[in-house]
Image (cartoon, rainbow, N blue to C red; front, side):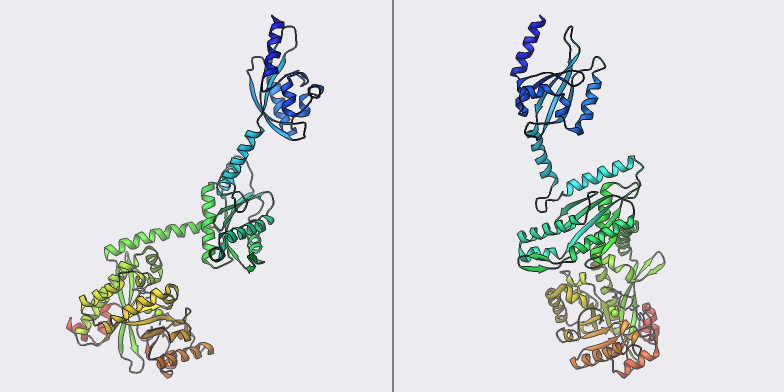
Amino acid sequence: MVRNREGHFHELARNSGDGVLVLDRDGGVHYASPGTAEVFGYQLDDVLAEPVSALIHPEDLFRTKAVMDLFTERGTQGVHLRLRVRAADGTWRHTESTVSLYEQPGEPARLLVTTRDISAQVALQDEVQHLTFHDGVTGLPNRSYLEQRAGDVLAHRAMGEDTDEVAVIFLDLDGFTAVNDSAGHVRGDHLLGQAARRLRAELDSSSTLARWGGDEFAVLVEGSARAQQVVDLAERLGRAIASEPFQVADRDILLTAGIGVAFAESTIDSGELLRNADVAMTRAKKRGPGHVEVYAAHMHDTVVSRLELQTQLREALTEGAFFLEYQPIVDLESSQVTSVEALVRWDRDGQVVGPDEFLGAAEESGLIVPLGEQILREACQKVAVWRVSDWDIGLSVNLSVKQVMSSRFVSTVAGTLAETGLPAEVLTLEVAEEVLLDEGEEAVTRLAELRELGVQLAIDDYGMGYASLAHLRELSVDAIKIDPSFTADLGRDDTVTLLTHTIIQLGRDLGVQVVAEGIERPEQLEQLRSMHCDRGQGFLMARPMAAVGVEALVGGEAEAEL
Ligand code: C2E
Ligand code: MG
Ligand code: MG
């Protein structure tokens, strides 16, 4: 019976596609099926000559030993094991084996091992893994890989007492889109490959560089002892991009990168860490090309408080918490008040908040459009009433970019004028010079349409933006308002004084009215008068005030009529 069983066994082993081995407890090979030798390219004698450990990858040996030890306890069932085995051609093959106890009467207990070469399967898995986690353009790991890796690193750190910094550096190429659009995607991809190599060259093996997407790269920095080292590294990466030009076709293209850095605070998860780096990078880009910005907790707070502010503003609009003040504009020669500028304020639970603190958020959320309409209507109504009482006074209203560009704006202005009965020519709409530059052609057409209604246009805060003196000739405007910073330096700074003088002169030549803003001291007023500046506005003459204040200022004439 015993012999019969042996015979069956050998028969099975010979015909099995798998390798079959019987091992002594010390790893010596008691039996090897011919298939075993064949799979790995050996002669059968070679396999029998040495203990199996000679063929197993050194890194996998400890697992082999652990399995052997298991079988000293009786009753252990079959165990599966993955090992790398050296084939006759010297390559390491991935194998999957099953080990079980092999007992024959009258013989010492041995181990029965069936083993199969799964290298092809592993290679396929590797390839799938590679495709899933790699970026084809740069050859770097991709976003999915980095996300997973960041998760692993943070999970690992949470378990140990490792106090090293874990950080993420986000990097976005400035101006890449332009290259991609002009030189084509193939060259764009080539440039990304160059950038990837430069970045990789700055990093050691403790960092993972990945392509995050588009022209964005991300670096996961593990185990850096000090935060400053990470920031230094971020700056080095920036220099690696900016220091020499990239070759695109036969042109040299200089690029910079906006960089954000975020550190993993103790309880942070990987999603948050990556988001923070992204937030910092966006901040860096806002500051201009080539900046490095480190994420600080307050950045998150600013985003949150900005959202809160937008909600509050929406409520304020429906509750009617915005109100207007009017600041007189004075004819410098006669000292008469010729018009008023409407300036918006927010009554926030009894506290007056100035426009600089909320207009940005109102603009961002689009709330400026309905708010602007409300401001325009209220101001037109008020001034129309004043004019009924025979007071020839004009009105200036400020416009934001969003308002000017909103499609219904021209008809809103026309409607408001009709509704309030204010003559178009007494209304001046003030726009910052950036509007013309940022929005280009479209803004120019929009403003021309407004002018066709008969309203006047003024450039506000002139001199701060880019509208040069030469530009002034091309702009069809009725007035320019010289920025307060000019007025402040009048007589103190020769260049500014000369520039102010030139602007006034040029304005006169072009038939454009010039208004100086921010007049606070008598000597400024004198200077402007001597330069023949038409109009002035400032605390020296009058601060912005409630409508009743304006009425009182002009001697109660208007008030009497109300
Ligand atoms: P702006 O149009 O240049 O308005 C003049 C600003 O200068 C006002 O600030 C005014 O209070 C201030 N000012 C006037 N005289 C002096 C002075 O002698 N010295 C100094 N230091 N400042 C003076 P305010 O009211 O805080 O408004 C700031 C800006 O907010 C305005 O600048 C304007 O661009 C914008 N703004 C105000 N109201 C509105 C509005 O209803 N709609 C829009 N879109 N923007 C508005
Ligand atoms: Mg203004
Ligand atoms: Mg101004």
